[in-house]
Every structure is written in structure tokens, then in C-alpha cells.
Length: 136
Image (cartoon, rainbow, N blue to C red; front, side, top):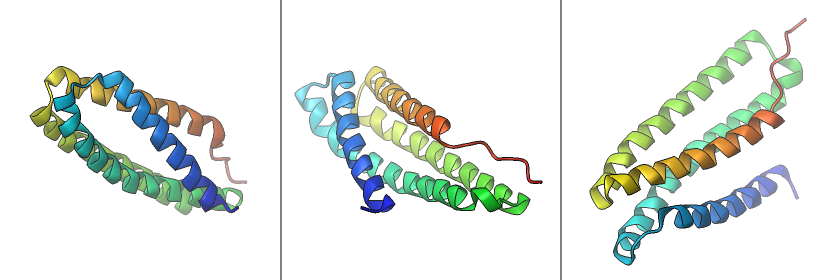
């Protein structure tokens, strides 16, 4: 099994676990569920696309780690910042959409839950991805 297969399996498991955690956190009524989950799926599909760019950037970092140049390091960092900007735009856009279908308290709760889950993933990545070494 190659790295891409492993990444996809891991993402599928995380997606299922995340959805269960979100369902538990949200405590939606039947009516809210009917409108929430389609928008949730749409939002997460877009997030998935952007996160794929991040995964590819992390792979690029890993592939170049031993031969990193200043130019490559800068290029990778610029790509990470571009991805962060895309994610922020998506959050802003979808928060407005969630406000149209949910009370503000539940829309905020949803994004709080998303942020907590993202923080856990980010912490895991921070532990696994080494810092740049100074080039000699």
C-alpha cells in the first residue's frame, strides 16, 4: 500500500469520526438536520479540496527536506499562506450560509467544533513535521 492510499484511508476514517463528533456537538433538531447536513457536506467538500493542496505542500516539504534551498523554503511558505487565506475565505463565506439556516449560537458552535478538530489535527502535524534546518 502506498502513501497516497494510506492518506486516503486516514482521511476517510477522520471524515467519519469528525462527522460523528460534529453531530454530537451540534445536537440538531430534525428540521435543523435536514438543512445542516447538506451544507456541511458542501462545505467539507470544499475544505477537502483545499486541504489536499496542504497535503501536497507537506509532501513537497518532505521530498525536499534534505536538499532544501532558501528559494524552495520561501516557495513552500508562500503556498502555506495562500492555503490559509483560502481556508479563511471559505470559513467567512460558509459562516454566512450557516447563519441563514441555523440560529447564530448553533452556527458559532459548529465553527467552534470545526476549530477544535482542526487544532487537534494541526497539533498532530506540528509533532510530526520537523522544523527547517539551517542550510550549511
